[in-house]
Figure (cartoon, rainbow, N blue to C red):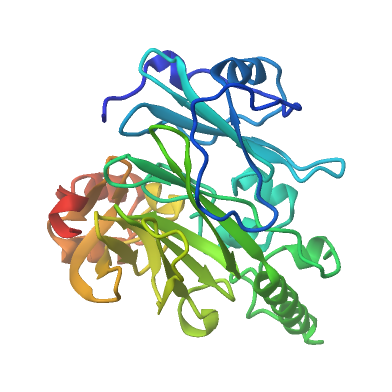
Length: 376
C-alpha cells in the first residue's frame, strides 16, 4: 500500500496528552519478545486512542504519516517536563482515517524536540551535518519502515546518564567552524578540548532503546538496547540494523558500529560490524551506507555527489553506487548522470553569480534508481 494519505490527514495538527489509560479490551496480541529495562509498551483501544488525540499535550509529529502495508502510522511525543520522562503515542489508521491500533510507550521517541529538551549530545550534531535523528521520511530517521511496510522501528530517546548535568556550553557539540581559531591565551583550544571530553563522555554513557512493531497489529516484534549514541537505523525484511558510535562520527576515532538484530529470533545476540559510513536505508536483506549523513542542508545547497555502499547484513560488500545526489522517501536514489559535472559545479558554487549557479545546478541531469534495483 503506497498511495498517499488523504490531505486532511497531513494537515491535521494533533495534540494529545498522556493520561492513565487501562488497556481494556484490545485485539493486539501479547509479544513474546523480552523487553529491556525502562521500556513499557501499552496497547490502547481505538476509543482510547481517539480520546487521547482530543485532549492535547503531545507535540505535533515531525513527519507526514508513514505508509505501511496495512495503513498509515504517525508518532506523537509528550515532551519531558516537571520530572516526567515523556512518552510516545503511536497510531495506525486505515485509508478512511479509522484507528486500526494504537500503543503508547513510557519513553518518548528521539525526535529533535525531545533531544533538545533532554540536552542529548546528538541534538547538537546538526552543526556538523548530522540530521539523521532530526528528520524522518520513513527511509531514514528515528521512525522508519521496512521495504514491504510490514514492520516499523522507532528510536527512543536515550536514558538519562548518571553524570553531572552539563551547563549550556557543555551541552553543545564542538563547532567545527571555530575550533581552529584560539585566541592568544589558548582559551578556545582548552574550551574545545573540554567540550570534546564532556560530550564524548556523555555519548559513551548513553543507553538507548529501539522498538520494532508489526504494522498490521501493533504487536511488539522486538525491543533492543544499545550503548553509545545512536546515529541511525535500517530495517530489512528480517533484521533491525542500529548504528552507534562512541563519538560524533562513525569513522576515524568515532568507532562506528552496525548492530544487526534478528527479528525472527528475538533472543538471538546481535552481529556487530565496524563501519566508517552512515546507514541511510535498506533493501530486503541489505543496508545502504553513505559516505556522508543525509543532512537537510544538501537539499538547499550543493554538497556534491557521494557514493553509496550496499552491504549485506553479514558484512559482505555487495556493490557501490556512485554520483548519488540524495535519497527520496519513496525508496529511490537520486543520481547525477554526469557526476563529474556535478563535482565541478559544486567546487564553483562561490565563483559564479548565484542565479547563474542555481540555473546551472538545476540543469544537471539526474536519474531515479529504486532501492530494489541496487539493494537486494
